[in-house]
Length: 116
Image 1 (cartoon, rainbow, N blue to C red):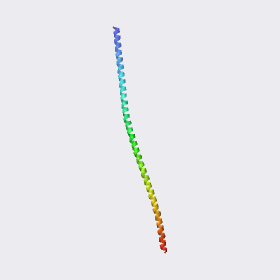
Image 2: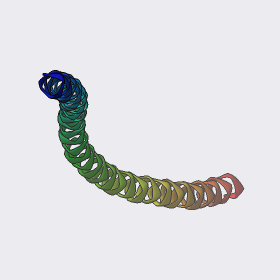
Image 3: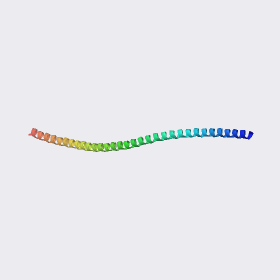
Image 4: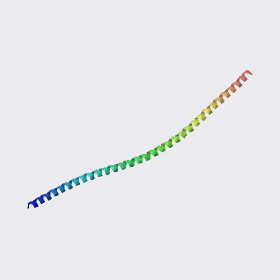
C-alpha cells in the first residue's frame, strides 16, 4: 500500500512536471512566434521602403536626364545667341567704320566745294 502511494505521488509529480514543462515550452513558442511575426512585419516594411527608394531612384535618374537634356539645349541656345551678338557687334563696327569713311569723304567734298 505504501509503495502504491509512493508510486501515485511520483506519477502526480511527473504529471505536474510534464504540465509545467509543456506550459513553459508553449510560452516560449508563443514568444518566438510573436518575435517571428514582428520580424516578418519589419521585413515587409523594409521591402516596401526599398521598392519606394528604387522608384525614387528611377525618377531621380529620369529627372537628371531631363535636366541634362535641358542644360544641353540651353547651352546650344546660349552659343547661338553669343554668335548672333558677336555678328551684330561686328556689323555695328563695320557700319560705324563705313559711317566714318562716308563722313570723311563728305567732309572732304564739302571742303573742296567750299574752297572753290
